[in-house]
Length: 99
Length: 265
Image 1 (tube, chains in turn red, brown):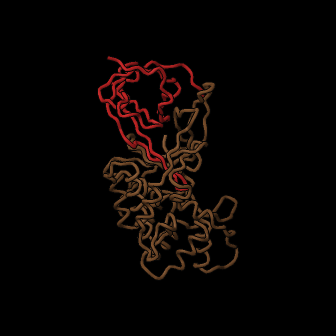
Image 2: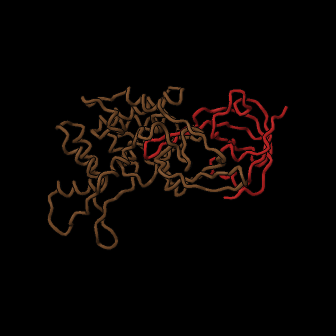
Image 3: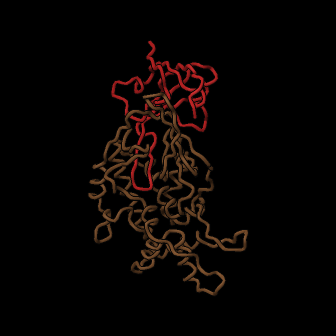
């Protein structure tokens, strides 16, 4: 899977979800990932969907990813914006906090 | 991220923490298929089928338990899910892929109610998958690589309200995994590690009710009850691993199927 055309997204943080995914492995190991659910403002075609970004590392307490209502601007590869792909924060580039 | 090794797979607690029953069963040598062209007693046939399905150790555990209702129920339930089916070539094979109906029989009445109430009451879907892949982006050259997430037995996505269980797990293993995953949905414990401890304790109680082996031998006391301190010690001893030089961008599942038909018995 290669990163292709970046899509510019403006979105508002709707919810921060601790431990949104729990993984369990055959050998007994486990992992957990927090997530941020976003309401997309732009592009319009993504608006009906809530965009969920999972965090490989827990964001710091003051991270904009945790701030409900915060407007964010970023780009994300178009080919990752598919229903069958679970997005992680490594896909997010040029993250900016908007006023 | 938390608890991950260089292959992209979480390594959790101490290396031996929480070995799953899949590993327990896989560690036992499997016997060959029964000679189906010869008359056999039902017991022998069933034993062979069970051994092929879950391994010698698990069968030995079931058959050598002191007489009690739970192991008997477990054997009967396993018999239900190991009924031979006839292959295209005229041979007889044992069905290995699990279904909702098989798992519900394995749960038994009370635990079936718990699992189904969790799924239906919270609007969760169950999906099976063949393989999972994570895509990683490397800091040094921006290269992206998709890596199979080997050994992922199951997971719970609370945002999407989906529980995924790997398709090739033996039914008993799938039942244990589903019970564990629904435990995360039921749990009111906020803290990540404390919730994992609570869910594993609940899972161990489930395994005891079914007369199945422990997830890890040290998680049972000599009297057969759950050793909560041992579980807590293992989970709290988890190693936090941070991948260096790469970041995860996405995950996808191959061979996903919706598993429907969850109902109260």
